[in-house]
Length: 492
Image (cartoon, rainbow, N blue to C red; front, side):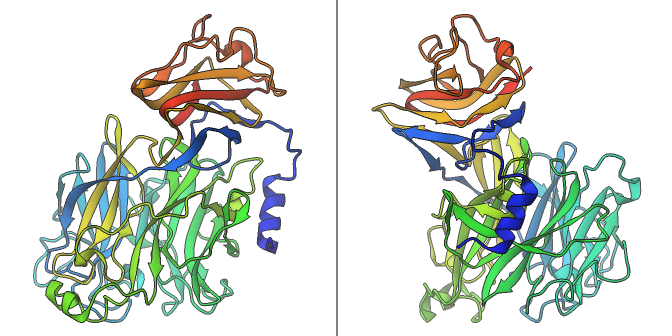
């Protein structure tokens, strides 16, 4: 049964428009991560792809970091990357003074160093990478971002949330450089009184500026009927926030299973900011994998090996004509990043993804994962994917096709991010909404696309120029054999 929150979100997003109304994609990039653009599949399917393990990015081995470090955010600052994370060498209550917010910097996302920030004295030295400490309970789950809003004040280029229910709620912070932080208000801006749940805020609470919606959003955790769930609030100024909306889970228009999601890590995808991707930590309480002997061998803290977790992939699309603002699309219910080989990967609160996916090569992007939690070997690990490669439209050797819903585009050429075998290929036809081929742009008129490229312009007998069809309702027919298509975009 659909919830009240789902219907409210549907009304707000205009999703009760006629099913015949075309989706206006303009010139934005569309990824094959859900059913949003798909009308018919024949011999094709959506495939969740597996990120490649690239090894340890850096270890949490500074004296003020340790086995209980976590809640990592990766922020791109120009041509550099910065990781923010909680440093915590001991197991004790949330919000203790043993928790500090640390940072590490990288030029390429592969090699990381700890800057000497010099903002605080920690364990007798100012030569450390701590950017915040003894800040009520904010350092438990401090979550920063670089504010991309036009006209943002220089002293507020960076913003962040942190806090717990015991501390009263989420505190707002600002910084000119991401290293020196101060409060934006003396009291929490999202308070426990605003959130009608018995327990909330107890993990990474994720704020960001939405270019697509032109407002600040925050996705944060609550407990609903004893299960860790995600809610969303909105703000125009980062100080006054709307009441939370509980997000549902959908799988091809059906309700998806409600599972414990410890962190949600929702953020705009950097190549398609209208699409919010969520690489969330799925927590399996009481699902014990290790024996006492196995736990002792890896020296995991005795309180942290009787549960397990992995990473899942889901999306939400708060764009005009979509009800996704009220739910996450869980097209893929299976795990996205599984625990690795060895007992150390199957303890409690490990395999937690960092916030944000970032580009780390000409054709590569990376996601980072907190691993070996509560162990002497605790570290952040990197996993790589091709650009746009979370999932793909896949077709086997027998061949098949996919037809989109009616859409309106803006642009002069059609670009594909795709891969084929030597025997495979992709063709694209542009059709009338009723399915009739448009002369000159049919599948038969299309040159076979063979290869493996991030940006290939599709060619028909008349060339690559599709501007005559720009602004008109059409459908796309992707005819494929032994191939994957990761994304498409109409460009000028």
